[in-house]
Length: 146
Image 1 (tube, rainbow, N blue to C red):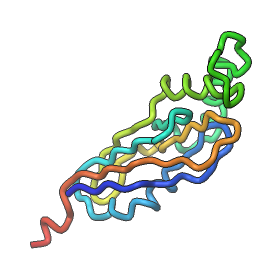
Image 2 (image 1 turned 90 degrees about the horizontal axis):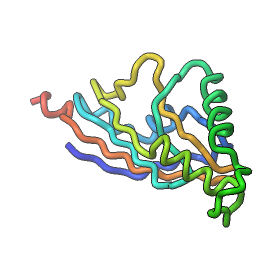
Image 3 (image 1 turned 90 degrees about the vertical axis):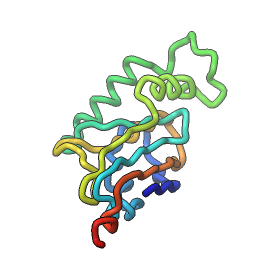
Image 4 (image 1 turned 120 degrees about the vertical axis):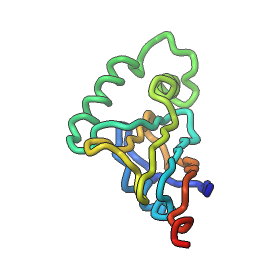
């Protein structure tokens, strides 16, 4: 069984956001999969996807502070600043973190660890919503229902 669909993540402020529920809600097809994977690919070069701590919001705040310190907007050597001082830094953060994750699916749900969630790293100060492609692949529960 293969399913591919476009997901839309609502606009977020700059920072790291837990979007696990927002993704799950848009993928009711997960319930159909007994065993498989879901691949999420973010179609943007100024935001990122990753898996990390899902319980303590201070982790997301610390992540943002780390990247603001490591890749500062006001570095004088950036040439690519046409869309503002966060333009090039957003691209650097995306390359560093990545724009895709693959998660196992087991018994109709994403098999994330107890303390894991899907993060959207929004690296622009004023970004709109984000689109991603979700590709589900796996063994359908119906295959066993004979």
